[in-house]
Length: 344
Image (cartoon, rainbow, N blue to C red; front, side, top):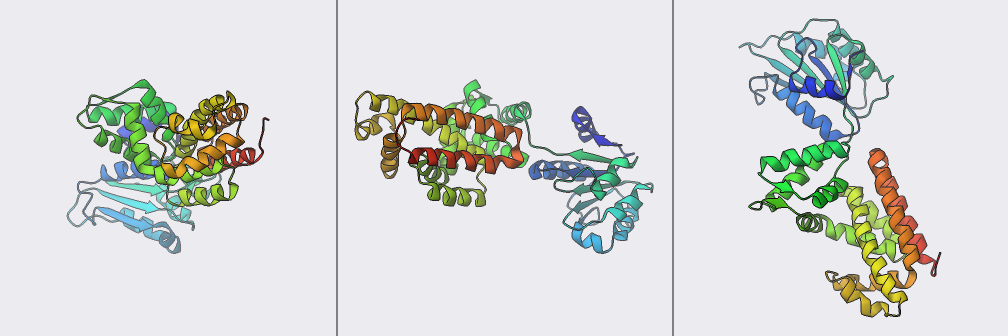
């Protein structure tokens, strides 16, 4: 079995083994699959922009004629040089073509196959894992250690450091898709250009600029008890590509501010009077939703909600494929709680 794990993956990616030129990249992190496929394919040819050197094949088209993969792999370029074949797997199987190829000797040609999640018994995965001249590499969402390294590497390239609290916050906002995470870090580096260190204020400014319009209606709807609004706005945010971790992070910040304000309300300060001082950056259009939340949610309830959000954030890190469902469930639970006035 040639299914690479951990450091074996890093070693192969750093120096691909010519004796194993067939590479299957699969898993739920489409950005990581694409990033690794780009690196492996581009390093296999002299000129990635040469269509005779870099051949791209759609997997569903290949399924109609799997032998085409063998023909392409055995083709000798007219002017010599190395070749790479990139195959984007779809819903149809072309495993028979791969199986035939694994029994042959390839010279100066690398086959890079990109796929989504594959079960252990999937024909394509089985064909590559059992072949001596192929490798199968699972691409799963980054953990905290991977994200910390990605952040440091990207910011170091821009001659930037990052404060510890800023790093922790940024890690919570990333994950799920490697390229999306890398793009967010690069956007942050561009924003902080000319500074020596990235701070929490920088991250909050970028998050607000990038997604405030999408996040505020979801968060306000949840804490004001408007379940229907939460369902609609959350669905729109997912359709526009907002990472659910950003929504939960925004909800956590909002819950913390509400909790402090609720303590003042319980000491006798009217909700309307405390909003301006407790929420200095609040847009006037959100004031009504915040006042409603303070009327309906006690400090005890908000303390429970803060814990629920922390649990949701942790669960999303462990089960990234379920992150949207976990986030939506947490937000709807907040909305349901806010509809029941009084203490728990």
